[in-house]
Image (cartoon, rainbow, N blue to C red):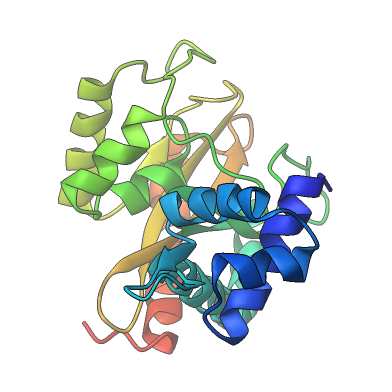
Length: 248
């Protein structure tokens, strides 16, 4: 871990216990006031710390929000794990749970088929927004300004012949997803796999995650997934949502 990151973590823990002055932070770290101020300003700019009217520093509202998201996601995985495992056993394909984490969407859980090929995805890693079905299933229900933020950071790099490579086409795919209630990945990252994905809601009705079933095209193409798997997938996502407190 770099020295700057270690100091930033130390500062956040220090000011979380009680608001502190720049001098107190410097003394706590054993560094000059200017060094403490530089890190504090960076943390404040990022919303992880905030400067109070009396000049002291406290934790920022963004940090509190991230902490709540973390708690929500731990709860999400706890609730979803058994449902995902059972879905995987029934369908025989790879099942993913992806969660909205600040300005990222990450894989929160994964169930591999017992006798099948294991896919590249890893728990804790961010999804490729412009190709992943789970990303479409989540972004389709977010406010436009949040979608804009995601797309501003998206390079729309082509991976296969079916990859969506521009924002306009992607927005159209989100509209289609919202209209029918589920999303697809038509071999958009790897041309030999495809998936269907369904959103998961929290107690407020907000979409916070998505569940997907991904299959080798040789075993099940999109048409087969939509007929044979999608109804079960939608029931699973609805069950998880209800266990999180959502009421249709």
